[in-house]
Image (cartoon, rainbow, N blue to C red):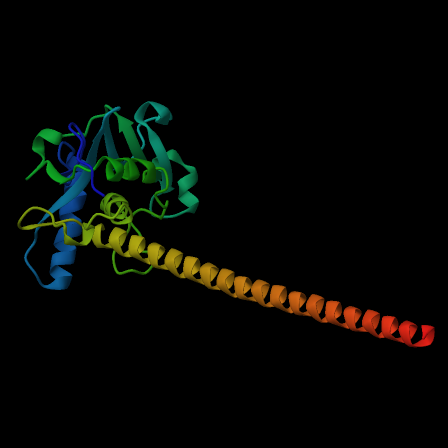
Length: 250
């Protein structure tokens, strides 16, 4: 049952990649130029995504950020850290990203967001589910396709993973017209794979439980039958003894 609550919502923001940062913007353009050439298509604008989740207790910003500005992650509501490019490099802060669930936080360069905010839902239970899942985001290697799903894991993967796992149709969400969100499909695929695996495991446990229940019932019936047979044999023996005693007494 969906319950709409005033002041509750899940909003998606699309931010141009590198907004406010020359270094990220330059690298993004080089990345897109290479991919457009290899895929024989026109270049597109690249987008980074972030969520703003509002519940009665307050407003929370969920976002993947790299590099990590300082070690005071608690002040930014950091829930997960993961490696960038290589797991071995993740021991150094400069090669780690962080996932934030930042109460009353800010989205950098939100004033440059395109076609945003996009309301995805206003169900309080679903909003709380998204917030809870922010602490369970898988810490895959940023910038790598280590799971071989066809696309690298990055900030967009985190957002699409959260939405898919929370039951929102992330696969049907697209960036602004003419744009591209690298990594979005990766998060959807990983989330769907994890849910299917969990479903199969749950089904297997249910099947095993069912089999155990059947075995328990069978054992109980068998035990009952043996008790009944023992009772009948005992009664027959006693009856025979009584009969013998009666005959001898006569």
